[in-house]
Length: 110
Image (cartoon, rainbow, N blue to C red; front, side, top):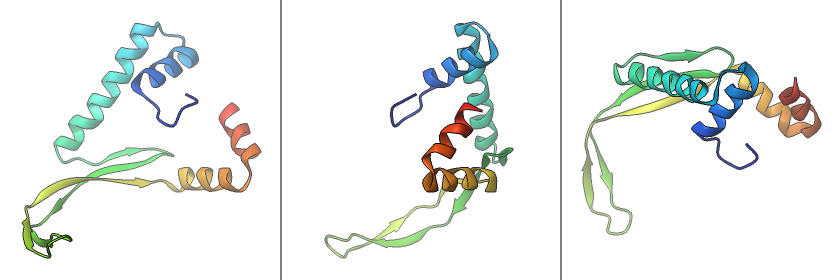
């Protein structure tokens, strides 16, 4: 997980290392959790992950936008958007990592 993006494979590997399930079982578990989260969001439910944050779907109404190149007004249709709000625990962990990189590394190892 040393890159800039964490993938499903990275999550599965972390579950494999931490929990001790087989690699296939770890991949199925990660896939099951992600499917449950996305299904709940499709139903319009809020998903809260303790010490991480919450996901919700917001309805945005129709509005008039403007093409920046031509200045032409264009209607923007109503849509649903995904919103993530980080928990205070996550925000504090991120901000402490900015102030002292060694503290962030010790939190990851703990």
